[in-house]
Image (tube, rainbow, N blue to C red; front, side, top):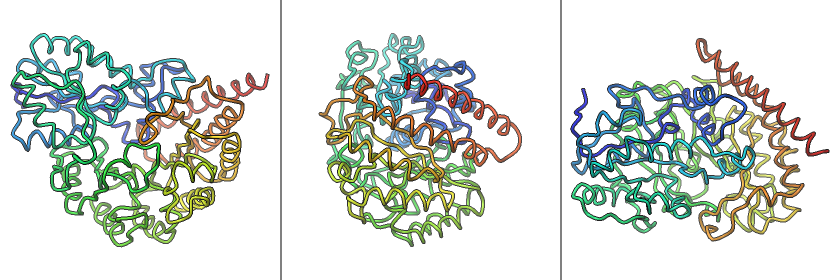
Length: 496
């Protein structure tokens, strides 16, 4: 039984403390607001609560597990707790650390969906409910400090009110391993905390300073490395140095998930899994194949968090070899990809290295070839487009619409997302629904039609096993059918 007398509690809101029915990509459902499905049913379909033991989650978000590992390494008395069970451990807690992904719904997917439904996304609603909950207010009355961090920490620059009202004492932005211990120690000692602590790229931890997780992560997510060498103007990750973990470090975290967490599903996480172990934009065949041989020897199913179309297109034989290893145990695997635009001219302006080792003016060809290779090898992409990029012209939008037509026979989901000012474009203006022209609307409908065309096939491939997952598949198909009907009605309204 866990010790209830702890100094530090770590948690996350309800949308992040979920295993998404074992499919990491269902987590994107948290970016949507309330819709035509009742909230209770929707939350079960897309973010059911994680299993717990004595209030401790069987798995937790990977970033939270990294903070937990760092604090344990520095000697803190710390527990990661489900948000529904915080009160049980509250009595002695001096600090509560909260992990957040998208606290105000400012992420690209959330802003796009919120503009369609004109409501607050689930993830923003649940984050706000947690930080203003009676249990957090009680902790504050008892003198506990609230520290928030995670990928969504940047959003507090636009909404500092929760910090100003002292509902939150400190927001940590960036890779926190080198600073988190000092901040938590100061909080325990009752010292003043900085309202916003931003860790710069030069202060990012070295490879040897990043601890291994000691408890299981949601869906067995394992980090392969940090940073990205592509340098896209609109991305925060490219501002960080590229570091790849050695295989033995990855295996140690794999062991935690498999042996401690009893997980047989693993998600390999990097900004581009295809580039694991490579110092540049050319995949390293030997390291990538060895990684997958080792991982697939221990698990039943894997997925990738992200990969690049350029890396896929540059090494079709490598993708074929990887598929031979992976598809021995599963019917398909998935990854998020960035298409961003179908315009070679716009690609040259804002992401010239995204096409490497090809030329930026070859970007549309790279997308077509990459998606074709993925289709042939049952690597299923969830692709994103950016709507409203700075310097975007009508011709750029037309080229993107034409590209979507070109890849209509490639099994994929393609999601258009409004431009959010991040990375080197953080000083640019946000793109909003009011700025959409007729071409933008055509592009949005074209993407929706493409995705809904493939959704039944993807559901059949995703839920092939027996039991409750078969029933789940039928629920998702009903949801997709309703979405198709809504889309047709929206198109008719637009035409009239």
